[in-house]
Image 1: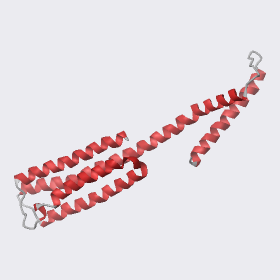
Image 2 (image 1 turned 135 degrees about the vertical axis):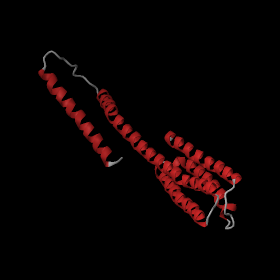
Image 3 (image 1 turned 90 degrees about the vertical axis):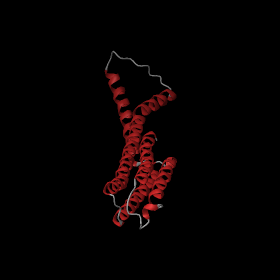
Image 4 (image 1 turned 60 degrees about the vertical axis):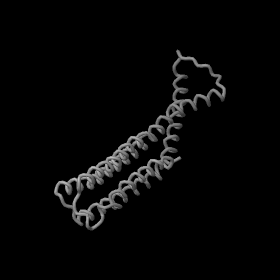
Length: 195
């Protein structure tokens, strides 16, 4: 347990004890109330445990749920940023298709986008390893999907220096490959919320 949790439990038990003392003192001063003076140790212990469960657990569970929710929201934002980043390639391909030319600078931009995306994926993986180590399969699936998209774009004719124009078949095929990867990232967002 963390130091903060120990302090919360200690303060709660102290308040319960003080509350019990106050009730004991006040019950003697109020003549209309009569209490049976016989209480077994087991009954007293059961009462204290019940009060502790009723007070302490809701705070601890709420904190645990809130902490996980914050981490999930952060991971979802990271994945959304990844989608935004990778859209640069889609936009670049669309612009080159419209312009009717594809230059070396465009190749460099695509490679740079993939490089920065790989760094973001590594960051997401490390965050999963820390916060949700049992759900690493989600990240591995994303990495496989990313590799498939990257290999399609950088492992084919697009990276050959003589490739200088994006034709309609390539444009359509790229759109399909891009949409597969983007859909996978969107599914990943739902999976993160369900962890």
